[in-house]
Length: 532
Image 1 (cartoon, rainbow, N blue to C red):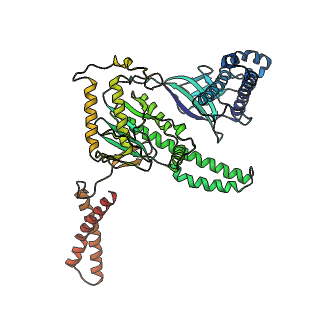
Image 2 (tube, rainbow, N blue to C red):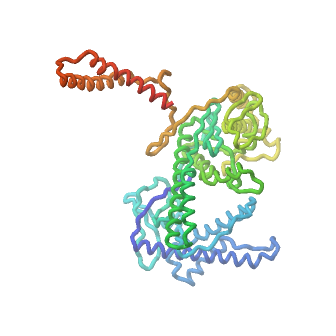
Image 3 (cartoon, rainbow, N blue to C red):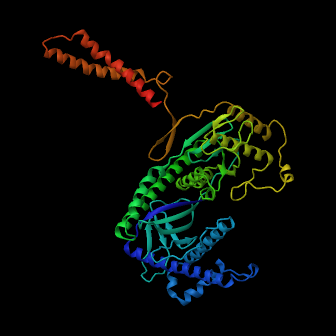
C-alpha cells in the first residue's frame, strides 16, 4: 500500500529561482511532446484505424538523449523528472480515451501549459536523498548556479520512500509530496459484515448481521456557502471583466469554494475514520456508484433529478468518501467490497416486492407491514445481496477490489460449500431471517450527535430526560443548595441587621435554605428535557 504525505517546505529566493528554471524545462518538454502527438494524429487520422501508428511514451522517451545533445540546457533537469513528465502526458491521454470509451462525449483532451504554470517535478525511485537524522531532503539537479536543493522536513515517513514530488499551490506555498510504501496487516474474514448505503441526506446508512442500524447525517457546507458564493459572483459579474475589482471578487469566490471543499473533505475524513475504527466487521460492503454519470445532466430529467445532480456536485462526491473508507480499511487489515446496488431501494427487504419510488419518499411503507427509512432498506438489501454472492462463490475479488464476474452458472457451482451446520449457508439463512424479523417492526434508529473535537468526531447518544434513569447526582444538588443557601442566609442576616433585628427570622431561614433546593430541581429538570 502506498501512502502520500504532503509536507510544506520553505525554499530561499535562490532556490525558488532554480525550481522555476527546472519547471520551465519540464513544461517545455510536456508541450513539445503534446504538440508532436497532435501533429501525428493530423497526419494519420484519414488512414484506416488498423494502419494508424500512434506515438507512445516509449517513443518519446527514447528521443530524450538526442534532445539533450541538441539543447544542453535540458541537462539541468534530472533524467527521471523528464521521464515522469512524459509519463504524465501519456496518463492524461489514457484517461481521455478511457472517458470516451465509457460514453463521455464531452471529455476534453490534454491542453498546453502556459508560462505561469509550475510543472510538478517528480523524482521517481532516484534523484533524491533523505537524511533521517537531520530531517533534510536533497534533490538532484545540474543547474549552473550549483545551489543545493536541501529542504527541512517536519515529518520523515518511516517506510520505504518510492517517489518525491515538489509543487506549488495557489497561494504560492511550496510543498513536497512523499510516497511511502506501507505494509498493511493481512485481511482475515472474521464472519462480521457491515453494509453501507451512501447518500446525500444521510452520508452513511449502515446495517449488520446483528440487526443493528446506524445513520449519520451529512454535513452540508455547500448549503452554507452556496448563497454567499452566489452573492459575490453577482457583484463580480457587474464589474468590468479582468479589472482590479473583478479580480478581487474572483479571488474571493475561489477562496470560498476552497473553504467549502476543505470543510467537506475534513468531515468525510473524520466520519470514515469513525466508521472503520468502531466496527467489528473486517468486511465492509458498499454500493458501486457511477458518480460522474449521476451528476451529469441528461435530457428529459425532472426537477428532483436535476436537484440530485446539483447536490452530488456540491457534496464533494460520494466516490471520494468511498475511497477514504477503502484506504483506511486496508491500512488496518480490513477490506471494502463494492457491489452493484441496482434495485436495492426499490425492493422491500422483507417481502421482496419491487416498486418505483420518488426521491421525495424517504420512508418505505410496504403492504407487508414494513415501515422503515429507504436508505436503511437499501443497506439491508446490499448486505443480503453480498451474503447471496458469498454463498454462490461470487465474492472473490480482482486486483482492483471488484468482485470477479463469472460467465456461466457452472463456474461457481464448483465453489459452493458443503451443506452442514458449520457451513456459510446456515449463517446466511440465520442472518437473513434475523434481518427480516427486525425489519417487520418499525425500525427505530438511535438519535446521534456528532461532537467535534480537535482531531476526531465522537458519536454519542443524546441524554435522557429527568425521570428516566438519568437524573443529576444528589451530591451536586446538595452542594449547590448549600452554596446558594449560605449566600441567601448571609444576605438575610445583613438585611435583618439593617432593620434593627439581632436574630434572623424563621421565614428568612426558609427562604435561604429550602427554596434553593426547589429551584435547582426545577432547573435540572428543564435542562434535561431541553437536551432530549
